[in-house]
Image (cartoon, rainbow, N blue to C red; front, side, top):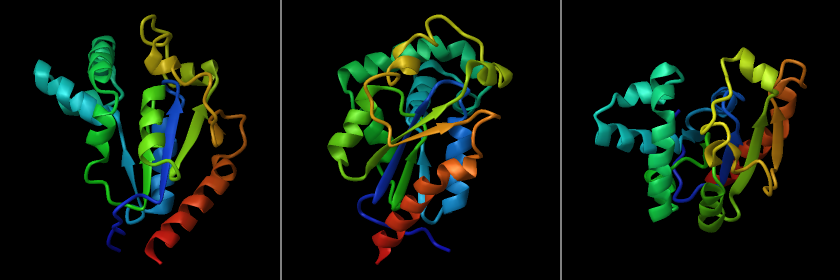
Amino acid sequence: MAAMVTDTPKLILLFSGKRKSGKDYITDLIHKRLGSEVCCVLRLSAPLKEQYARERGLDYEELLGSGQYKEQYRADMIAWGERRRTQDPGFFCRLVTSGATHPVWIVSDARRLSDLQWFWREYPSQSRCVRVEASEDTRRDRGWEFTPGIDDAESECGLDHGVHFDWVIRNDSDASPLEEQLQGLLSLAQDKARAGVS
């Protein structure tokens, strides 16, 4: 089936959460459930990493991964990205959304209040905030280790307080099954996608 094309999104799901909480896993799961004809996954970090790699002569594809290559540049990349955001808070948001035409957008990595504020300003009725949470034990099991300057920086802590989340997904082994937790979110996305083509 061909992708549904729309001038403006009908729903934008803005995901946030700590490193190794499972944001990518959950957003990929939602994408599979809704289908690529209905939704797209937008990663705010992708244009940031692409530009950072270009300016520094690094491997962009490796920076997109979850391995050690990215980790060795993470602190400098965060500082570089903060400088760009200070100059223009919507820079990366505009880059990642340009050309997106699906009725449902899944932003997999909102990390700062300025990211959310841009979407709230540009798409006030379509934007919904989703927080993915996992215990430190679960995150450690997934390879997380506290790193000063990264795990206590705005990119990890900027949305810890003062944000109303429309959904909070617990991504721990002892949490409710993800299918149950995602049911309301998936229903809304399907309804909005159908409304977008009627």
